[in-house]
Length: 496
Image 1 (cartoon, rainbow, N blue to C red):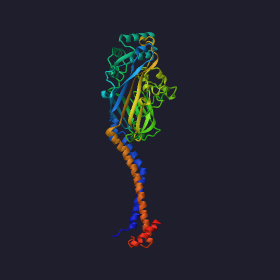
Image 2 (cartoon, rainbow, N blue to C red; image 1 turned 30 degrees about the vertical axis):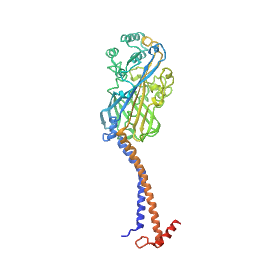
Image 3 (cartoon, helix red, strand yellow; image 1 turned 60 degrees about the vertical axis):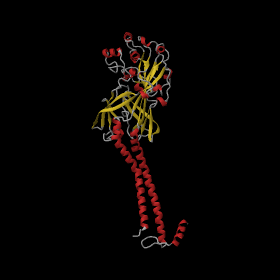
Image 4 (cartoon, rainbow, N blue to C red; image 1 turned 180 degrees about the horizontal axis):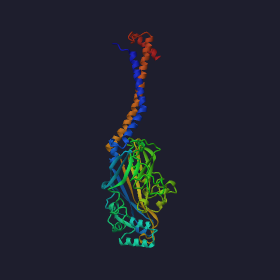
């Protein structure tokens, strides 16, 4: 049976129109489908294999690099001279985090405790845990400042106790001892006769209370009822707000637990999170866009106001008593010890702090903290949190150990916790959240382009058939009947 070319042309026009329609629908429906899949995959739910595994047990290597400020002139410092320090490290530890006691609740929250352990990595370190360094003795110099307003006789008695146990203003120990604890008769004495004076009942070390410990009982939103709330903290250790600080705003528990954030972030979004180690909520701000192995990201950094004092930034008044901007006084949650947190090398701090200590060289690349976030999902791709631990020291009458020490905020150590997504997880992440959405986006334009091209070609064919019919050259079945002689003039007319 002969083919009716006119009907075929009309069929192609209809097919092209349908293809254009389908492509146009994809333009509007495609993003909705993608967003819906993101919502389903970012809700905290054991059914979401990838995201739930990433949340429950961080599946990528996470490391803590520790740098010590080795004191070069301890005797001169006791005479009132400016401290000189040299940075030693890094001493790198692999950090393993694992959530336990995971319990889902009817109000769309889930509670858990996250346990952390550290394992020394010699191959990644610049030295060994047997390296010896000298740092300020927190037990002596911290106690001196804490007891400055106590009766003079009490100060003399405590100073005599320090001498009895051969405790001086500075401490020379191995890295391993300073990190995880060392035997001290003074520590044993305090734990026996003054329990609760020290943060740990065992050996005294800068990170002794962090290893084989948990960060407290977190209760966070799963996002099942509202994806905008996913990962946000509902309570910590049963508290809806803190009691450490001086204002309601500073005592607020804001943001997430610091591991993931709600999806669909914009450049106006911020990264609020609660840090039990810093005893407060913090907030990072957008800096710039970027890319990691083909995956788009937003970089968030600490604003200068993060550790600003109450004079320079009024909302921080509740974190005072303050010193220079760039220092966070955490004494209220560190047994009243005069401990301050800052960025490493006093980066983004009041420049006067650099004048009091020799050997510091702050710069953003080495000492600024950042988190790179995939904005569509709120998943961190690359993290580098850098903080410094400082001790406020000064001469205190009655304490012979303090000599003529000048008033100074003394850097002791700084550490960087970092990790990034890589390997099979990164490949899966890239496929599901970059490749597939891109394919869908390209397909919609392919459908529209193909449909428009089909309509144009079929339309031209139908027009030619119509012209031929007007010239009386169609056969009864609707096909064109032309002789070889007739084709040339027709083509010539079309060209004209």
